[in-house]
Length: 379
Length: 203
Image 1: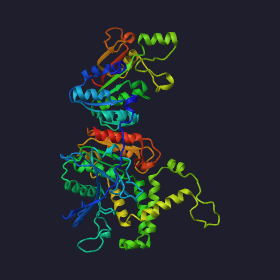
Image 2: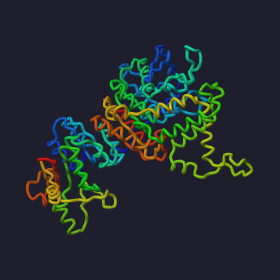
Image 3: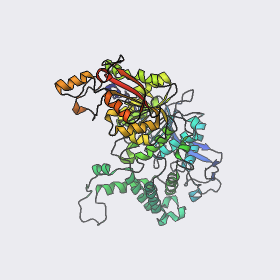
Image 4: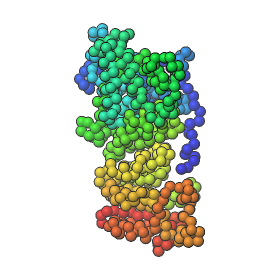
């Protein structure tokens, strides 16, 4: 290996800084692949950088299950938390906002401002809840395409995303081959394994069996918080790795106080997960969680005919990145997408990063990941 | 380009002679993707590299060469017969765990298999072993034994005997002299520093 090729290629990094979200409203009825329909549609989104005159420098970022449109910068001085992919997006960063116009929207069916089960149906004046149509990854992508239309962008420079965002990314390349210049899918797969479906369903059952769920017709102020928190706690375990949890928590104890209740928080890892569960409840809608996880379970690029048949529509060069410690969407699931693309004679690259952070590795700043994305986008 | 790089790429021109415009090429052990980039430029091929090392894949991405990070045997098994016009193993065969079956798989997946290797029988390598008892160290393999990948070097004569035994047809061959620049015309097992073969399973 030539040392000069290992040297960092990005000189100075800056920050996106203060950002504000916008709402895109489509007054046209939106039809789902299942046949269901919404009278209108809202997508909440953020953009960073500037769209050039040729409108050919746009990069669309697709977020993961529990993510949202806020992927870089901060909303205000009082907000300490930066967007979920802040290290990746900004001036001089791999998704360089001095070069690209970056768009990230909250997914259809989500609960951070885009139309989802918790939104009010303008025809009935009530929240959709379980009247929200059956949702698929294809629907999510088609809704995003309306937002891309809204900017007058014919062809995106790139589509990029991890996990559920990675699935959307590949779906983009399949459904809109003429509109995708290249794509990068991280920590994803062609379909859920039985294990991934099993975890999702256990999470859904935790929500559904919470009496507060009330067949999905709960008052948003009094939702199935217990069920949703447990679902999140369990899902969160699947985003980490055994090694990662061991090094972060081990058997560290929270409190040596013996006078406490027998089943109170004792270990550090319990405290962490309970916090994850509780904070998730404050920002996520239980019905959205049900719809989104179900869409992921149904996502299957092997159907209706075969993986090769599905991917034959792809024309853009792609980069798929798997992570060795990801046991939710294991490397093999990522690899098989590229294997199929290469069988089809497409331009596709598979890279695998050895990181200890499990499925969430794509959310961790790592020099190699940085370099891969930077180089693939710039080519 | 450094003299070492020049030497490393001496085989590119010869391989390019055997590759046709627009061919589909799979390079097993593609390294930094230099050969595929060269063939893309010279012959407008569709090329895919395979390498186990992420650093190498990064270099391929930088060059715009599609590459697959993983095991050679595993990726070969995913391709149907005759998926490629050429399957290339340039300085790769000596590092394979099971060269015999990988070459057989290569001949299934590719219509041609190109193999290039440093000739263990080259006289300087022989003298080196004879007088110093050392393994071969040269500009292409500059690292001492404790820093290099396990390697199982072989000679021109050994390789040709293998092809003969496995009924592998040698369609083309080229021997380079010790400087890896000029072609070596006689006594290749003794005088060739480097050998390149274009193989096929059918006559």
